[in-house]
Length: 150
Ligand SMILES: [Zn+2]
Image (cartoon, rainbow, N blue to C red; front, side):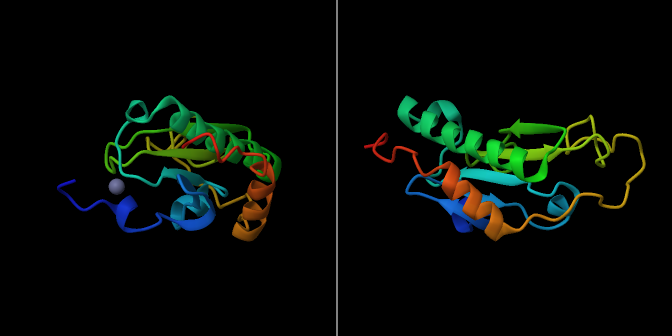
């Protein structure tokens, strides 16, 4: 790796859960205020694409992504979940798990697109407690088979 990588150099948010292969962080700042519960699932080892991983490893990562999605659906009852793996700006493999509401700032556009209706409403959804999310995700992932990856 030639250039410094923000996801190698830092967690990338408030740590919610981790194992030996990947971590779940709560995105911080204005994105968290606009989309409470917005998480990233970050592969620990630097690589760029899902297809760089062995099938067992990409399966492990997707199990964690889907566990985060299930917990957020229960916790913040969004109208929709957006899953995205872009990496155009930070080419270190990570997934965004983004709760969306019909009255959020960008709906129905992607959160990085133009503001949907031009009106930025006051936040109407409660902030997410990292401790609560962490406990719910630990419970959701209690049966994650850690032996899948040698
Ligand atoms: Zn990296």
